[in-house]
Image 1 (cartoon, rainbow, N blue to C red):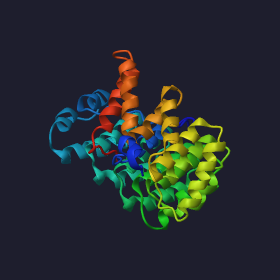
Image 2: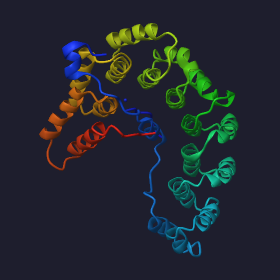
Image 3: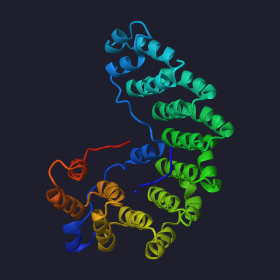
Length: 332
């Protein structure tokens, strides 16, 4: 992981014209992935075989077959291969094939893994297919982990898995006390994804953090909590929007207000304005995709028509529009 660049009711006639439609699930996966920086090998048996070479007898037949027991046995062995690259791709294969039976072995591998890249993959894999049973082992590993990137990865894994007991409280502690921007953002996003309502007071402090990435993440996570002091938070976010220097943070404030309190032309127009700013486009599209206001759809459709054919920008618009128009889309 490198630097954190995060990139984040209607009334009467106006409500009928531009009102909100039922919003989709928020794409937390996108935010987690940006921090995790896991490079997908695009797992396919042929790719796996190319990386393994002839190291494991019968690999081709095993991975193309539907014999999951044989496949698991190969992957189990490969988890402890001497080549860290093979260990990385093995974890992705386990995630793609969804073999939670191998999680105990992955936990043991994590305890002894010395290669940073392979370690990142193991933590990521545990977060992707793990369940609450693995929260405690991860928190125990977290207590002894010194590497900042690995601590952030562990925070994200805990944020993926969730939990209800004291085991998940390290997220609150890291969000509140960590001075490392990477670790702090990872913990804050975990609080939001898990809807940890007890994190409200912490996030109300971190919305004023010196780093705009932390402020942005804090406001995003507050958006999804069951707030005990919603009106006080609303007033604080409105003040933040009016006084904030960071456009990213102002965009997250606009999203908070629209998501929780419905259509407001001021915030809608602000987000549409920055749709034309390449530096902030992705953050705006993330939020528009979730809110799915007809006015947002129209704004994106207009820009899609004006974009050059086969351009990456046009393709991006088309992908977002397909998601916005599909009421059954789910991200998590």
